[in-house]
Amino acid sequence: YGIGQFEFGAKYSIQENAGNAPYGDETTFTALRGTFTQGRTEYYGAAQRVSPDIETDDVKERDEFTLGVAHQLYEPLSLWAEAGWYDKANDQGDNVMVGAIFSF
Image (tube, rainbow, N blue to C red; front, side):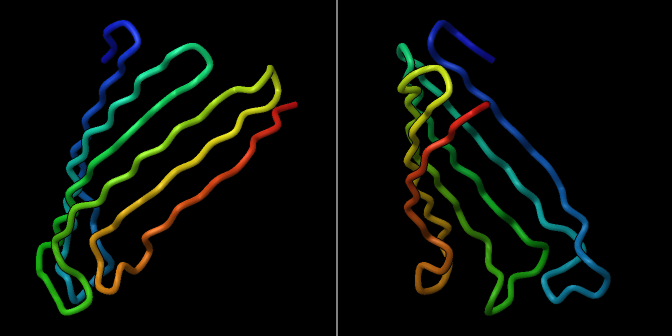
């Protein structure tokens, strides 16, 4: 859904887990995403709740967050940066990334 320079999205999905998974038969994902575009720069953020049927020591209900920015320098070259926080033990999986995309 978009209004001017803003775009919003929502998602609800249920993933079937492998048979006899210790964290239950299904995991539910509920997410929101927003993007703001100004010229050649796009700012975005997302939040997601991950809810397994059964919580274990390794798999717990958690909230995940992502923030990022992408900028198109000129037609084939874009630069981007993104950070993600996944609310796991010892900050497992949290990351900060930067990169470039050259499209041809």
